[in-house]
Amino acid sequence: MAKRKLLSLPYRSKLILVFSLLILLTATILGSITYYQFAKSSQLRTKEYQLQLADQMNRNLNRYIKEMQIISLSPLYDQDVLNTLKNHQVMKEGASLPPASERVKIWRYISSLIHMRDEIKGIHILANDGTVFSNLDSNTVLLKVFDNKSEWIKEIRQADGGWIILPLHQPNYYINRKENVFSVARLIRDPATQKSLGIIKIDLKQELFKEILSNTQANSFIYIVDKHNRSIYPNNTRTMISDSLLLQIDKGKRDNYTKTIMDGQSYMMVANTSSYSGIKIIMLTPRSEIFSEVNHLQKVLVLVVLLGMIVSSLLGVILSKPLVGSIHKLRTSMREVEKGNLSQRVQIESGDEIGELGKGFNHMVNEIDRLVTEVYKTNLREKEAEIRALQSQLNPHFLYNTLESINMLAITQGSLDVSDMVSSLGKLMRYTIDHSSKLVTLGEEISFIHSYVMIQKVRIGEKLQYREEIDPSILDISIPKLILQPLVENAIIHGISAQGGTIFIRGYRKEEKLTLIVSDNGQGVSSKKLKELYESIHSPVPIASKKYHGIALPNIHERIQLLYGKQYGIEIQSEVNNGFTIQVVLPLINEGGKKVEGSTSH
Image (tube, rainbow, N blue to C red):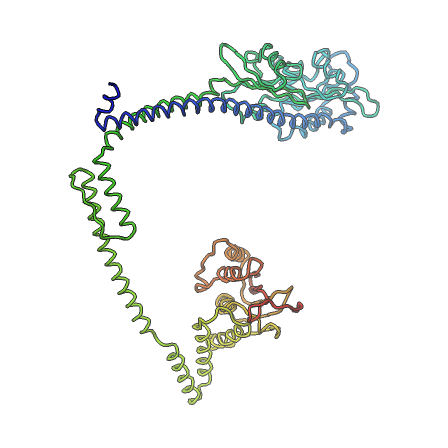
């Protein structure tokens, strides 16, 4: 009966019911497993993190204590300190104070030890007669103490020269006797006679621990005790750790981890004991904080289940059979359009949103078909225009023939300078317009330089001088086209165009490489400008320079490295009024593209 009623429900109701049950069942199973695993993982992760954190804090504290115990040894190597302490061995009657000269000398010595160490409250050297030498002034520390039977003094003497850690205590040399300090101390013994001369005591501020503990979680309670479980941190009797907790730590010593109850609240307690100093760092973390993320996850899971129920109801309402059928038709038509069938149209009779989508789809396909046709026709027209433009370009041979006619006319009329200039211009144009090869021989590039310099000399005059010293054996070496001409142009424009000068090109083999040097004796550049040029050349991002007419030094350097590798390129040198030098390093490659073997020469 129940089954019949269930089957008789409307399709949308059955869809809503099925979706809701699936989401509820899946979310319950997955949520329970996730909650349990996450809770277990969170507790284990927190435990490992706290143990590592306590160990790291103890390591940092050990490093600092080692520095302090090294400082406590320093008086043994200062003869002035030892001599001063020898003068204060016997307790005398009356309250005689040490001379100012002794106090100043020891004060300077202690100040050198405490320099740039704000965490040190004070360093005190106590002589056997009760005299106190300190870096602190007399308003803070007594210059003389008469009680040499304090517990902490006994503990130092019992160590017999070894360094010790003193937990929180109240030294009798402070004017404010209620002040608790944590100290590193040692008995000072005469290196020659091993006789006790006094005590050095380094009092540390609580800020030391605050700095070491600064990376810990704010919601953890941290306690530090010595090997006798005496408190070191915090400096507050109301927050000191109880003996019962210390007893629990000793019982759980094997893994340094235990659970405890304090003031009705459950805590995770971890401890780390230093094998070097015996100091024990204890961390108490509320379990409520550990499981805060787990509890948050639980709330999120409940919220997800509720949202899933709502979504399932909405999907059941929306996904009815007619709707599914209309969407299927629309999807099938879209797939045909994706294949390129722009004649595809969808037929949906309904007037609802799906029907509007069908109409929009049909309109979109019509527009796409029209635009594709128009774009195709436009591309054809553009290609035809490009062809006509190419056909209408000036024929380079016509230009060369024209220059040759001008040259012959200049010769017949006796204008030899004009003839030379036109010939050089023709060579320049043939060399630059020829796209048949990106590599030329060094000889061809030098010949191109000759033509360029000849034209520039006509323009500038005898102020421009040109010299070259090229090893004849390297003239057949292949180099990138138009490598040297921009460097010569740069030398003319920026180096010698104003006052004149000489351009000198050298070429030789060096260490199986081709070295070309373009230099001028012009005005040079400042060190600041040279640095800017160097950075632009070696910048990972090429920097275009308007000063070099689009062919900047960085472009030449990058072009060489792209062709041959990072070990090749250009280097620059210059000084103000002392010329500019550019060194180009290229591989030795012949016209066949093979590396040239040969001895070094220059």
